[in-house]
Image (cartoon, rainbow, N blue to C red):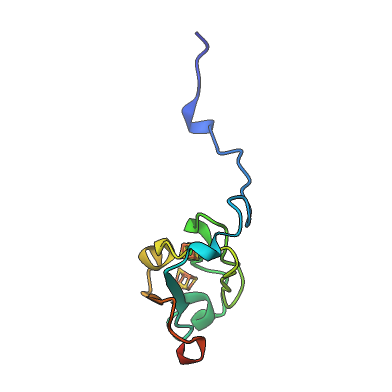
Length: 101
Ligand code: SF4
Ligand code: SF4
């Protein structure tokens, strides 16, 4: 059996938006980013981006501000769980968009 160095093992996967189809239609809750609390917006630095990193559908951009692609965001809430600033709130999908901050 060949020795394997597990420390050197990395993911070779390159998922992108749409790999699971247009999963935006699954959404019951919608993530809303409070830009006043978002770290890269507040600091104007390419910092944090946990939402981008952890989104399983690659639906968040690594930009200032981060932007969510609702065609693919399935509303799982992982970004809200992983945001260290508590800047993402999951709201009912039926909430009108104009009521968002
Ligand atoms: S995880 Fe939260 S603080 Fe970090 S970039 Fe995303 S919204 Fe902003
Ligand atoms: S709720 Fe957040 S983590 Fe889940 S798919 Fe939407 S943007 Fe990605």
